[in-house]
Length: 188
Image (tube, rainbow, N blue to C red; front, side, top):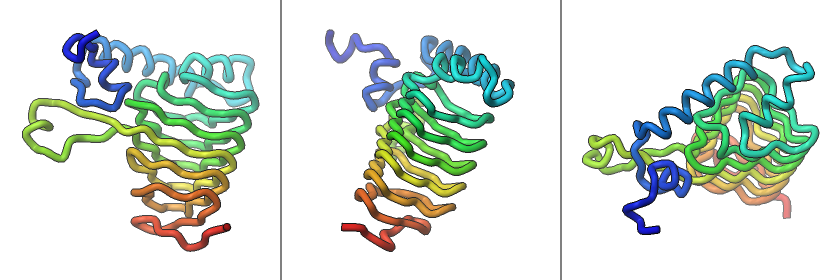
């Protein structure tokens, strides 16, 4: 397949420039909005709760908990490992992959952005967007209200302070907080 023949969806998932108004992507977001509405309308721990989450996300591990309401763009680019926990009001903009490791704990109102926009105003003017994957390791603790920006990788066992804005990678075992988040403690 040549680069020119790739669909907008394929370009989006690859993190390349794409047109978000492509009919296939508009239809995907509409389908996701319906699933998201059903999920957010359920009471937690009902028989339909986990199966709805499985329909909404790319993958979800055993024992993972996502408390509604929960907001995503597409859902199918999100992969949550076993026993991970996301508290109320999390927003994951998943134009490309967002992965969350086992036993990771995410506080309320955390925002994780894989969606990005070109810095060149001429490219933005023609409605092109892009994304950069976000990877969150195992046993990470992200405090409420934190924002994780596109392209960030957070290593295993890291701690992200509440309200922090994470603009760059966080090494395994590090504790970061602030805006922008800075390393305050590093476990060897």
